Length: 584
Image (tube, rainbow, N blue to C red; front, side, top):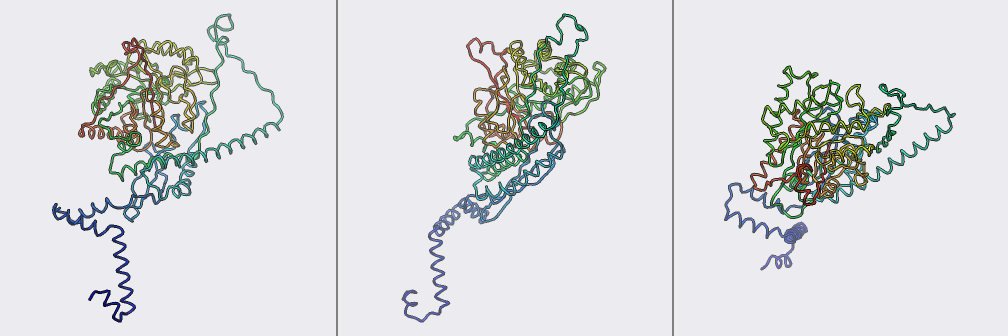
């Protein structure tokens, strides 16, 4: 007699009946989810394979059948970065196999706009540590009260959807902040209009010391200096957008069991890559800017740009040897240099009187090491001219006490490039407002040297609204700004498909290296070779190179050379444009 028949013809207690019903429900539950079939399948497989770790085999089998991890919460806290400045660190927690686990973290600093900390292009102080602290506090509040609840339950591998939510949130906060600034401006205008009018002093042009008031050409014939554009209002707390987007991307890579650069590559290229190219590292080897002890202000950075045929480890070794050789040469009697230190960018910082002294030092050190300066090794000069303008005089203070008009600065650049042909790029040679000088410099040296815009690239809080570049610019340094999502960064790079791209790294962890490799940029500007945080980035680039070499998919990059090196290309009618992408 069956159990059912026995039950139906016998007196069964209520407790036994409930137990019987519960067993039926459990059997139906497991059958509906295919558990018996899966257990039978894995037991059969395991019997034939006979693994040493039985339970490890079962764990791996069933982990592949588990639900997709989803975000449970995002936390944040204030930390200090490698420069000793405050930054925002976020952590993503996910529900993984019914347990909440912290998966990944990311750090992003607040000052990532390419200008000097706390300075606007006009030279006026616009922020300080209190404002940075307020911005971080706002970012942490947004993460805790808004972004974490909004992203709860989302799949971290869906980067595009997560970034859309972040972009919409950023735009809403940006419009609120802009309305608040407009209201404050209206109130201040009303207050000024109620005040009694005061006489406006008239500015008289300074006399030329050499020509006086004679009829010769002097300051009276010079064009009026175009005023500096007001700085774009920065959104306090915007770091929350950039750091959350970054940490979600890192979390997705961790859950997928892939390096971050692989995940970034998959976001822009759907099919698997049979060949990947590494960006060429740009190494800052010397700094003689305003922060140095000498009179020279113009050479903020002297940057080494190797060819794409050299391996990263070779390039880094070359840069280290060059810095040691420059220090050895400086200890000799030939150079009367000021104190030797290390800049914020991790490069050798030396005080010189004239730019020729710095360039002679680099040339001599390269000659002593038999380095091919001018062919496989080129130089880029970051002038950072936007910070050298003396608005009271309308001239650039290229050296302490030595001021030059924009037109005089054109002649100075022309002389340096003619004397040092290894200089193939100038970064920010003028303010972006000096349009005529950008055009004139292009006509003078455009075929022997590329003009690169960094601070002059008019980057806005909303990257897609960027203004036109100065004329003659062939390369642009963009940065992974703290209000920029990963999708924004990839899109901005993809829009420059026909140009060389450079990604510049600044504060933050080594993720920027993976972003550069995954986004397919041509150059990666990492700064100097001093400091643990910066060398971690160089080491990460070496590690990626070794991984790609072991997999056999490391391709040789094809970097476009300056126009003077491509006469044959010009004869065929093709041109050369470049874009540089940076994160600072």
